[in-house]
Length: 47
Image 1 (tube, rainbow, N blue to C red):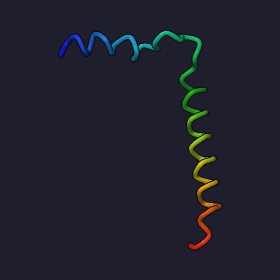
Image 2: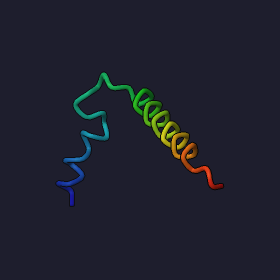
Image 3: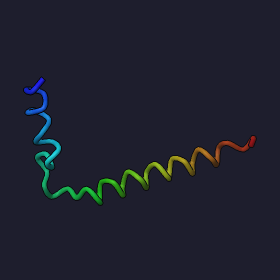
């Protein structure tokens, strides 16, 4: 079990892309999810 934790630990510390901002990644994901929610609600006219 400890070898799995040792393999996952570098990913939790930023992975291989230190230039990738967690705020930019989270903000982009939030924007995409809200956009998908808006598109879905446009197609759901029967409510």
